Image (cartoon, rainbow over the protein chains, first blue to last red):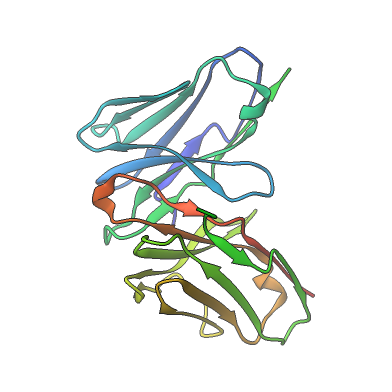
Length: 111
Length: 115
């Protein structure tokens, strides 16, 4: 069963705009991770945020984590057409051993 | 580093046949994972290994599925006999120890079609 659920399922924006994707999860976590998947390709790790962190940045990516609400958000600033992809959040499973992925948000950035 | 290498990239097989998917993880990564991705079910964890030992295979759908990791540089996922509902993209991923704070590295996947 999915641990994380992303929202929205699909998002369409223009180049230069910011894109925000949200993730909710069900149980306590050690860390939460975001991945990107381009069509027909494998997933690429973007960023990891630990449960004792509230915000983390990496280039144009900003991730926040609210453990009290069991939610996280991924913000992509100044989006580009190359950001078009599916984005997944993932949390460690109950046994603390492997990542469980949500169904993802499909982002389309048009130029 | 060549990354996680999966083979074959595509496989089309008749139902009832045996299918073997292969994975070479990144050297130095001590955990290896097999996932299956479909439109309906998303990414499902099938099984994972730590230091070549299977830790959790609760995601393996049926006894028709089996996975092995004979050494640190090779793993296989076998389906016997295969059925049309096994059609999916199968991903292998590897990761270093959790304390490194690094994520998983995924292979490019095997697109399996059972006809």
